[in-house]
Image (tube, rainbow, N blue to C red; front, side):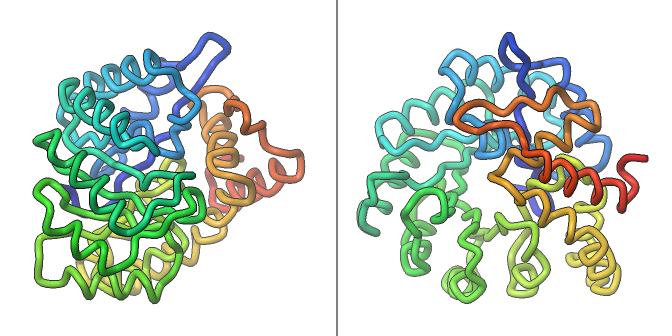
Length: 292
């Protein structure tokens, strides 16, 4: 497991497919800036629009490129349990260190269905699994009592909490306090209050463009240096928020293109950032010194 910051990596595309040259540079720069772990094929990586062959090729490339320098977390979720199991088994065979498994979207299963879904996936692999709760995208919310039940399942070791609900996150932390089960924030903009509740770190979008700053902020909290953490948080909070001025990963992909990490090419149904969005992103990148 990791403690600190994991970047939910974008997947740079070109008109032929995945731009592995840009992807490799992004990975190397993330590690050089002290990132604690990397997430491949998450929401920010646009896994939902990639073919099976592209996913396998991307996992292989990332694992080889990272080369054990930091843990590799691979997104393997699906709204079909059998597909999620197949994805998870394949990722483990390819060398993933951990799996990130989003709740089954669209189906709107019950809490009992969530427990059964994760139990089936966990029973199919031998590596740790992080549940990913993002009800704004999936239409289903993992309740705190359900998290407590998931924590009893072997291999279920953490949750990425992206509900945005501080009260719920407090209840989640309360339910698993005293255990080895970890809680990671899935929202950059509320990381300080979430960590004050006892979360173990962050799975970040903004760290695609400001990895060192996000790492320094989270590590400062962990080291008890709250003033430094607050100073960094308030300096970079506007940039964190602007990364969501349009649907993720539209803004962060544009920002990454300005830093040399591939083209500004999200895949349909996502479209390139609007002209007004470009202005917002560029203004804030300029404000924090990322561009001149």
